[in-house]
Amino acid sequence: MSFPLNFLQFYAKRNFVSIHDLTLVTTNEILRKIAEMELRLQDSKTRMALKYTCVKRDPKADPDHWEPMKLLVLTKRSGSTRTSVALIEAMDKLGGKALWLPLEQTSKVKDESYESTARNLAPYYDCIAIRDDHCADAPQRMIESIQRYNLPTRVFNLGNGDLEHPFQTIKDLYTIQKIFPVEFETGRLTYIFLGDFEYSRVIHSDLLALRYYGAKKIYLVGPKGKNLPLWLETDLANFKLSVTYAANLLDIAGEGDVFYFARLQKNLRNKPVTEQEEMKYAAKFGATDELRKIMKPNAIALHPQPHNREISQFLDLADRRFIYNIQADYGLPVAMALLYIFLAPEVDLDSITHISIPLSGTFDHVSVRAKDITALCVSDNCFKVRIFGNTNWLKILDPHVKESLRGKRPFIPCDTCHP
Image 1 (spheres, helix red, strand yellow):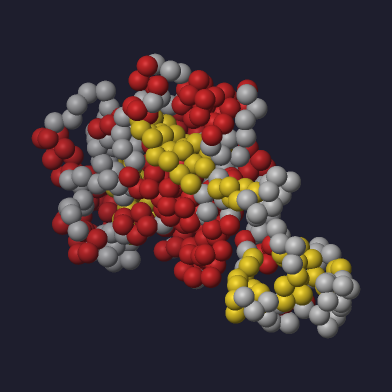
Image 2: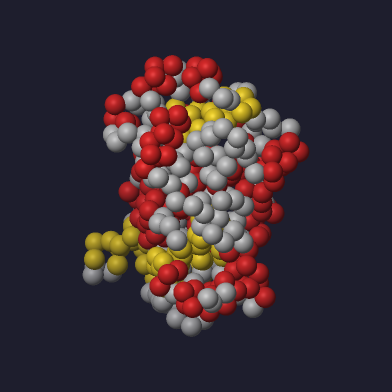
C-alpha cells in the first residue's frame, strides 16, 4: 500500500542517517519513488519537467525569480565516486545545484568541529551530504548543530565510519527487488555475503534492511575468527533475523540467490594491508572460476564498488549474473528519489506537465507547466488562462485541457470576456 509522503512520520525527520530510521512502510515508499523516478527519466517530457522540482521561488519578492536549491557533498579520508556523482547529477536533473568539497580543503584540517562546520555551511545549502571514514558520529553532530541554530538544512549520511551506508543499501534493495520482486518482498531469497563483513558498513546496513523483508537464509563467509559487530548481532536477534557463519563458500554456493561481494576495507582499518593479503583475500572471497561454476544460473552477484582483486575486470561482460555496474547505474534514480523526498515532498510531480499556449502571434506556442496556470476564464466558450508571473491572458492550444485544469484555480472573466 502506498501512502502520501506527508503521512509518513519518517519523512518528518527530514534527515537520512540510518536504516534504523526506516520501517517496512517507509522503505517500500522510497523504493516506489525510485521506480517512479526511473520511469520519468526515460520519458523526455517528464524528464525535462523534473527540472522544476528542487527549486525555490518567492512570489512576494519577485514572481519571475527562480532560485535552485543547493546541495553540498563533503567527503573525508576516502573518495566517493558513485555516490557523490549520483547525488550531483540527480540535483542537476531536479533543477538544483551541487558542490563537491573534500573536507581536507576545509577548516577541518585546523581541527574545526563538525558542530562548527555545520553552523557555518548550513545557511548556504538546503542539504549537506557527509562521509567520514573515521568519525562515526559526524552526521549526527551536524544535525544537532543545525537543529540548535534552527536552520532548515537537511543531512544525508554517505558512510559514517564502519557503521552504516544507508544510501548504498537503498540502491541494493532496489536492485534486488528489480530482479526478484516477489521473492524479495516475501523473504524467500538466500543471501550470501562474502568478505570483510566486520568492517563493511554496506553489509551492516543491508542486514539491517533485511530485517523488514526476511530471508530464506543469510550466510556470512569471511575471514576466520571475524564476526559482525556486537551491536548489529543484537539488533538482528531482536528482529529474529538469523545469520549463519559458513566456513567453506563452495559448500553453500549452490544455495545462493543473491551474492554480495565486498572488498577488503583498507580505508576503514587502522593498519595497512599488504598486497599479499589482498591476493589471499581475493582467492578466498572473490568471484573465482570455481565459484561461478557452482552458482545458480539465475543468481545475481552484487558489489558496492570499487572492486579490487575479488572481481576481475570486465567480469560483468563475461558473466551476466554479475550486475554490479547495473546496480551502480541505479544510483541516479535513487539519489533523485531521496532528494525529492527530503527537499521537495510537497511538489506534485504529476502536475509538472506541459501544455501548449499561443502567444498573440509572437510565437507559434510555448510550453508552460500546468502548475503555473493560476486562473481560468469563467466563460465556458473561452479558453484563456493566466500564468504565474505574467499579467497577460493567453489561450490554450487544446480546448480539452481546460477541463483537466479545473479544481483549486479561480474562474474570473478574461480581458476579452470582460474588458
